[in-house]
Every structure is written in structure tokens, then in C-alpha cells.
Length: 326
Ligand code: PBG
Image (tube, rainbow, N blue to C red; front, top):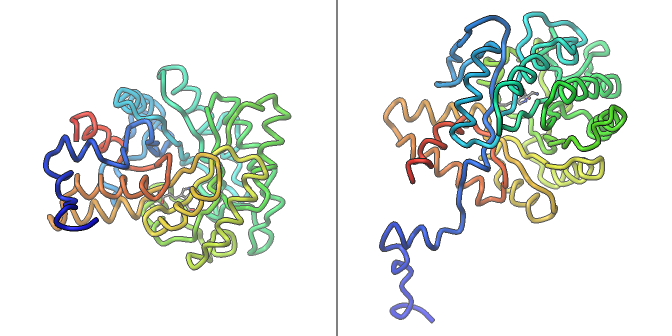
């Protein structure tokens, strides 16, 4: 059947009809909000390249988390900015470190909010790489036990989930075994399974002060040219015990999100990263695009591609719009 019997415009006539036939819906239950935690009291230090995003001290962070929970957002993912960095990234797995203290403080004060901890060394090493060094190389196997230590510290502090983002081979099984040994066999792991070596992380590295001091991350993060390899990364993480797998960044990798969703039967997360956020904010600030519409279109697009969960700096903006019925 075809025109004039078929007219697709019939179902686009009114907002109610369009809502009725919408194939993809975005809700606050899908969203995770990233937060940066630093030392100090009463700190709210803006990140220049990420309008509306700040580095927060623990007291301010707790207040922020209360607001995030009230908006109905599912959870937060925490990134720590320690005062002191060293070659082995001790701050990452110190039981008195910034993240462990932040988790305890949030868990004491805020109900109904998932607290997820990013597990990586790059914010804690003085060289800014995601693992420990052997001369100028990032040493895979020597990094694993430190990542596992960090995961256990965060879980013992009360985290609801850990999310390794380092891209070392074998970190998921190492973390799984360490958690199990510590009696934390029910703590889920969300692995950054297909994490690309991306220029879109630029603003994050300003926020977290984690740019590598030499070289780049091409020997551990994925080549943007590869898709089959992403499926292999995901498969290995699933075999190692990942409970949720993530694709990162989101918008330049919608094909990867789609393929992972089609081929695997566990929840898929997508990280709309700092550069994706900054691009939309900057264009909107110039009056070149409509901020709210572009934000919602980018989020719905990521869901439509197949993501069940979206980690996004837009979580609060989007939650407010969704609450207003848009
Ligand atoms: C840590 C990590 C990074 C991001 C999340 N975890 C930075 C990186 O790999 O350089 C980036 C997030 C963003 O850009 O929003 N390894």
C-alpha cells in the first residue's frame, strides 16, 4: 500500500499522537550524572570548558547529590581529584582517600541514589597515565592489582557499583576476584568495555587534571577506526564477569552501541563524554543552536541506538525538562 492510502503525517498531527507512537522514551531512571570531587571545604570550582560542571569538595558534593536524587536521577559516578599524586597513584586505593571519604559521606546523607565509582589511576598518577609505568610503557599486569585494590576500597566504603575505565587487559576478572575474596560477590561491575582513544575527552582532562604528561593513550584505549575489535573487548569483559558494558564516547560511536546491543544480552551503557557536552554548550552559548532541543535529541539518539543507560553531564538539565513534561 502506498500514497494516497498511506499518509505517515496522520500520526504526527498532535503532541499526544506523537507521544503515543514514540518508539524511544528517555527517563531519569536511565541517567547517571558524573561528579568531580576535590579536597577542601565549601569548594565549587567551575570547569571552564564544561559550563555548569564544577569540582566539588565533599560537603558541597553531598548537597549536590541530594539535589540529583530529588530530580529522580538514577545515580552518580564519582571521579576523584587528590591533592597529591605519585607514580603509583596511591590516592586511588587509599582507604582514607578522596573517593572513599566521598562515598561514605554521600551514603550517610542521601537515600535512593546509586553511587558508582570510576576505577582508574590517571587522576592519581603524577604522569597522568591510567596505569603504572615500566620506563615509558604502561605496565598492564602491574596495574591490575592496584585497580582491584581501589575497587575493593570503594565497595567497602559503600559504593553501589564500580566502573573500571583504565582499559588494561584482564582488569574485570582481577576486580571480580578481589571483590569476591572480600565478601563483595554481589557488587556489580560496569566495565568501560569499548573505550576509544578520543579527542572528545579533552574537557574532562581539564576537570580532572588527568592529561598524560607525555605520550597519549593509544597503546591501551581503542582505535576509533575499529568496530569488530569493540565486540571482542565487550565479549572478553562479559566472560570476565562484567554486569554492564559501556561504550564511550557515545555520539561518534552510535554504530558500536547498536552492535553491542544487538549481540549481547546484558545492559549496555553509553557515556556522552565531556567533549560532546562542551560542543553543544558552546554552540548554544553562541546562539547557533537550541540548547534544550539539541540536548534531548542527542540523548534520545543514544537511547535509540541501543543504550539502556546514559552517563551524561546533561543529567540535571534533562531531568528538569523531563519533569516539565517535555
Ligand atoms: C579515566 C576516564 C576518562 C574519562 C572517564 N574516565 C578520561 C580519559 O580516559 O582520558 C573521560 C570522560 C569524559 O570525557 O567525560 N580514565
